Image (cartoon, rainbow, N blue to C red):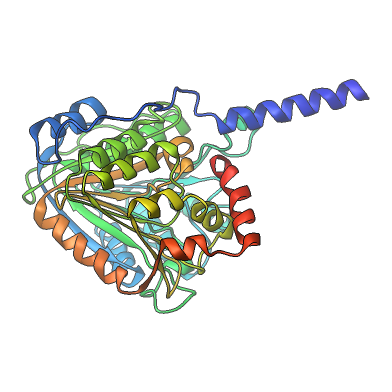
Length: 419
């Protein structure tokens, strides 16, 4: 009996260890500031050292909150003529989940190839009947890393990506999940503030490739051909790339991309993050940027957040940032779920990635990087509109927290890699 118990405990410890480890060496040394964001060498680093090539000729339209985001996504699905590929973390039952299921099913019945990849954990709150109805209509639905004995070593690796690609020509990415709290216009505590982005042009092929990589890993099928990868003509004037990371290959690439962008900054860094839990490397890079004269502004959720544990872990780590001169802001009206980084008014990075260990090391993530001053200016305006609905959190606020609050935050910060 004792031997069996010891075996079970050892197995449990092994599973926890494997799930908390990305399996690859992590970035452990500070990155030197060698060039600014507008230097050609920065473009080479982002496009050649780290990710896919930066491609010209794209158009990106920002959509804010469910009242803008969901109609645009549903319109694209209903207009599909060849293919629909959809990968998401959160998909729950409810009116908006039903509406997406109906739109996807209608297209499948019309003979369109419809492929849906739902994260197993993120879709636990969707009724099985809804999924079965989609399958009966001809939608090919798979779950990413379902709870199976052969998946125990990967159960903490979730796909957090939000990707919709229609006909290989129109893509969507950002922060929204398919659930009731993303509907509306962030009008109250039950409706969240978030952004999503409609994308056209050559970079949509990058988005398709990212989605199909997880599709192949999940079901073993390779989807290709003109229906999935049509010839893409320029649709706008933006340079862009679709950046992605996964513990099964390049788990550190997303954090490295963010660190290189921060390290290249010489003027400003604006960060909006639903879950802001910066590790030592990230905090060091931000502090170094501030000491170079870079203005750093950060928006995170306030008390209205879906997980208080993350909020406590986050605030425990703000001290050295505030002491260095970072401007910290907490959003007041409702849950703030945006993911945005704007550097020096040139680089804008948006998508599924939060500024935390889970996004940087454990999840499959995808971010759209846009290199354009006009687009960055538009996103800075949005950032500043959100800023107007925040309360600034100062160094004095941080130092004067109650002792019990400080203790609780220190404990949760220690647990940050597991959140």
